[in-house]
Amino acid sequence: MSNMGLSAVNQFLKPLETKKTHTYTPYEAQKNFASVLKKSIENVNELQNQSDIMTEKLVRGENVDLHQVMIASQKASITLQATLEIRNKVIEAYQETMRMQV
Image (cartoon, rainbow, N blue to C red; front, top):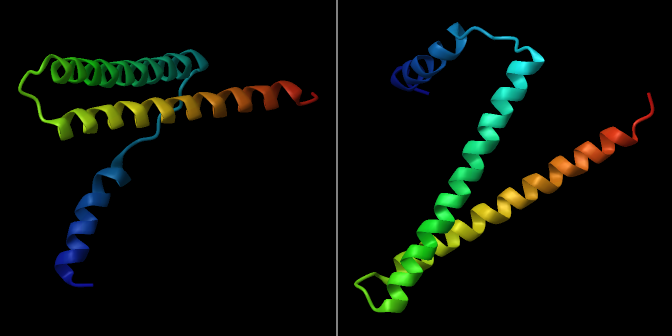
């Protein structure tokens, strides 16, 4: 690897090394998790709405490219499927935790 390649890697890693780790209280962790979850759901909803709007425009005969409508539809579909899989994994982890004997 060349010196230029190493310097680029070092510049990338430098901010990561100086970053301090922060221990969160349970309340802060819950609040952060809730905000990430809310943003993710809002993103899924936004992609679904964009897909619906583009599909309606296509049906009405407005000037919209078919491939753009299909791309928006697939983005919305894939995002929703991924969200459902994550939900299923979280529920599965919760159920497994509840089955543990203390």
